[in-house]
Length: 433
Image (tube, rainbow, N blue to C red; front, top):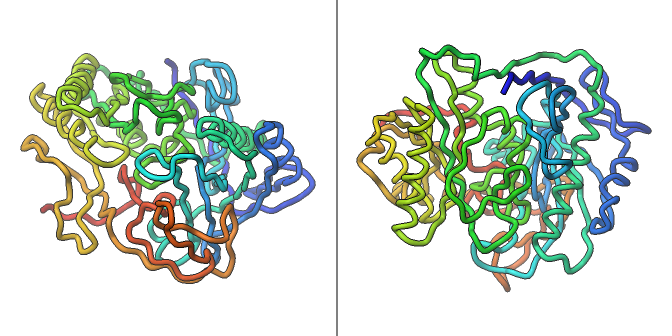
C-alpha cells in the first residue's frame, strides 16, 4: 500500500446559511439541505441541526456517535467504505479532514432490550465545566444533528439509519474543502520505513458479543463478532474502515472520532524510531477460559508473523474480556515481543479499589489512562440540545428521570461522550507506582 496524504482544514466557527461551504476556517451550513440528505433514508423521519461551542453552557443529550468530517480526493475507495459505498481498499491517496470540529449525532431510541450489556445507551456532552474537562469533544465546535427515527425499528435497522445518515452528512460537509489549499499536510507511509527499524504493532482488544448486531466494531461495514484476530493496515483507520455500533454509546466503547484519531496508531506512524508493522483487531469477550486462551494465542501468533519487536496493547469494552488482553500481554512477552499495556482503571470512587480485573506478572510495563469510577457533579445548563429533555442516568426499567437542564450527579464517567480516555489520547501527568 502506498502512502496516505492527510490534508487538514481547520474550523473555528460554524454558522448556518443558504449553502454549505468552507472559507477561511468558517464552515457555513445549509441545514435544510443537510436535513434533506439525512431524510433520504425512509427510516429517518426528520433531522435538525444545532451548533454548540467550547465554553458555552450547553448540554447535548442522546449522543449516539461523533465523527470528524473527511473525504477522499485521490486514491481508491471513499471514507467509510462498505457503509457509504462499495467495499474498496482505502488507506492510500489523499484524504481531507475538517479539524477543530465534529458532527455529533443525537437520537432518541429506546430499543427492545432494556437491561444488560446489549441494552441501548446514549451519552451526554457538556461544553463547559467539569464535564468538559473530561472529554476532547468539548474543545471542538460541534455541529449537532438530531434524528427522529421511525417507530419500532429493531436495533440493527436503527443503527444502519443513524450511521448512514451521519456519515453521509459528514462526507457532504467535507466536500466543501475540495480544490482548496490545506492549512497543513501530513503523510503516513509506514511501508517506506527502513527495514532495520524495530517493528511495532498495536493490538486492540475489541469487545463484541457474538449473538447480537450491531456489534461495537465493524470492518468495512462487516461487524466483528465471533471471530479470531484480523490484521489491518494502520492507514485504514484514518479513512474510516473501522466504525462502531451506535446503539450502545458508553465511554469505554470508542466512537467513530476515536477510531479516526486512534492515538496509539498515530503515535507509531509519526515516530521515526519505529516501523508500524500493522494493527491487530483481537476479538475479546469469549465466555470460557479455553476460548480466551485461543483468542490470545491467535493475536500473539499474528504479531509474531508480522515480525513485531514490540506491541502496544489496549482494549475496548469492559468486564471479563480484559482476561484476553492480559493473556495477550503474557503471550507476547513469552515470544520476546516487548509490550506496553494501555488501559483505564476501575479503582472505585476514591481510587482505592482493585484497578484491574485480572493480572499477569508479565504485564510489568503499563500506562493508566485514568479511573472510570470517579463520581462527577455537573452544574445546571443554560441550554440543552439533542434528543432528550429528560435523562435516565441509570439504565434500567423504572429508573427515575431528571431534567436535562438541572445539575446532574453521575456515578461514573460512562455517560459522558469521550469521558473515559481509554487509549491515552489526552496529556496526563503520570508517575510510576
